[in-house]
Length: 94
Image 1 (tube, one colour):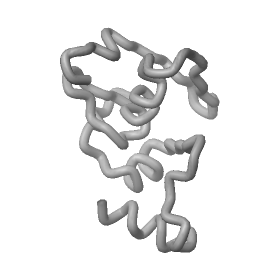
Image 2 (tube, helix red, strand yellow):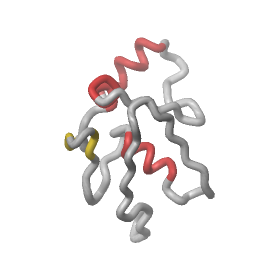
Image 3 (tube, rainbow, N blue to C red):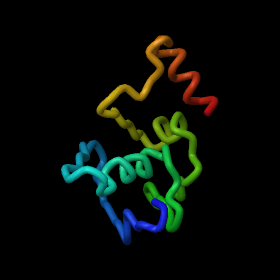
Image 4 (cartoon, one colour):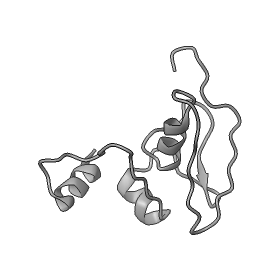
């Protein structure tokens, strides 16, 4: 962010059906890692591979179905005025 490097040379091997969580101080990159893993954010440098398949720029609805990824944010992450189906449809269009 800005000129500050948040992540550097991060390699993870996560097995099928594993649950992943990060614990750490604020502003160390935990949320950025989850956003990159779940395809919500593209890395500025490098690439994201799942099962050897390049998955940067994959929309969240596709990463959820194709790669079986899920993410539950600590606070919300959806529009409260919409029902579940409407929120999912909105995520497909963004």
